[in-house]
Image (cartoon, rainbow, N blue to C red; front, side, top):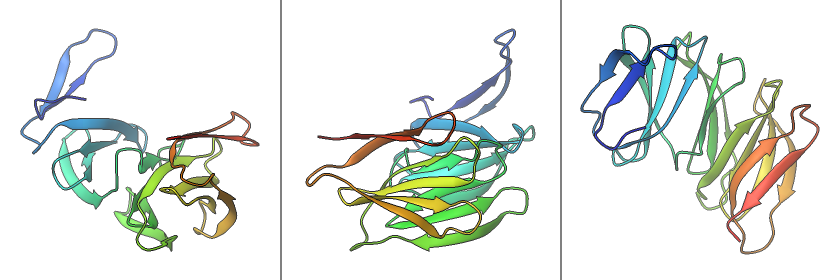
Amino acid sequence: ASSDQTIRLRRADSGTVVRELRNLGGPIKALSFGFGDHVLAAFIEPRGLKAQLWRLPEASPFADFDVDNRRTQSFSPDGASYAVGHRGVVRLWDPRRSAYLWSTDLAVDNAEVGVIVFSPDGRTVLASLARKKAFLLSAADGKILRELDLPAASGLYTAAFSQDGRNVALGDFG
């Protein structure tokens, strides 16, 4: 990530820069690879809180998403789908077909989506609404599997599934 509005793709074995994506409109705050390293997601902050997907190796942008913050976008573990959250709505996107697979409205007064993470097997998505609740969603269809209440006046800042997917750790603002 970079504050000079540039993404540099480098060879991990040599450090050689193989491509630069320049003038992206703001500081790059988060990056992730998906779809077999053929797609790069970039969270670019001052662009109105946007996540942008780029096809690799040609480095061409092909999708923009409104997101609530950099923790509200995530690739599935196999990289085949991409979840984004904005104003209480979680959507699952298929980068191969450039199409939404599903959309689930969790909104309580357009509450900000705080965190999105996938379970290790990719079958469950955890999404939180800031200072409200966390939800476990089916990655297949977006149906709510379970609601998790958050402590009063708390806000979920980070979350992680255990490696076997049976437990989830939730970290709050306090």
